[in-house]
Image 1 (cartoon, rainbow, N blue to C red):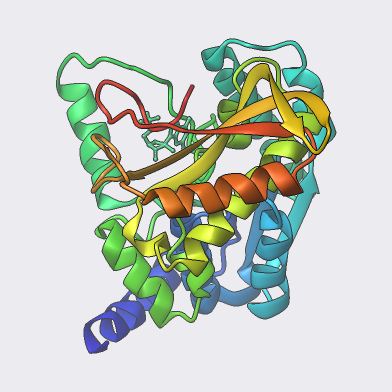
Image 2 (cartoon, helix red, strand yellow):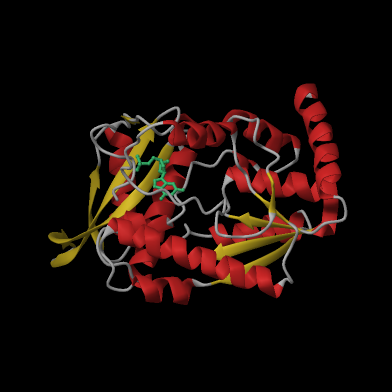
Length: 319
Ligand code: XMP
């Protein structure tokens, strides 16, 4: 619409004025905020922008391929895709504590990002997809005591002791405005309308030890679940939907045989900000269809459960 068109033109002028002939680096996560920031900045300064996508091996099915296809092939943005899955999965081996998982991933993420940034010869500016609610949150966080339930590491934006100035073109926007701007910029709907995804990725959806095999299994389950949600036309009515791989094996029957395989849980919630959430009330026919597909198509899974816990008392993620 015209408002977003005007905003887009104004932002581009602001970015040019701030950056001049400087070099900008942007961490891409595949999420909405960093994607919109990257495309907007690229429109303003072209090849003065380089993006770094650190792939921890804990993304959903086809997500990394989609990031490369969208930003490098379609938008012609200079993009470094670093597959660091061996490093991340190696360091996560044997780690079962959720907070240790988060901290391990956060630390490695910054390490790898800095390494790639040095390979590029550094930059003058670091771009971040900071939104207005993030600004408010960090201001109020210094204003009084707060309780940390889970340490949040947002892969889209980076802290670190980097001596770069920040470019934060989305600082005045709310999420729905960022989505509108993304559509205005021609970013595909699969990215612009995507459900939130946590920085630590599938690691916090695999209670217990994380391995590549478990991540592969979970990716298959998650892909079937989301495919069914999309084809039922429910994706946009849900804040977040995902599968969790449970660290438990149970007995089942398949054909003439007994199985002893892993169980998984499905989660879907509605929410406006992720702070509180209600369970999405799927009908049983939908859940049965998803369950049948998962058990029939994913070898290694023989039981499917649906998580009916609201937030509070549950959190959206399992870890
Ligand atoms: P919880 O599980 O705390 O999640 O109810 C609330 C929202 O935050 C997301 N989340 C994270 N996002 N890094 C992130 O960037 C994290 O470590 C993290 N943990 C949870 C979660 O997916 C939900 O949207």
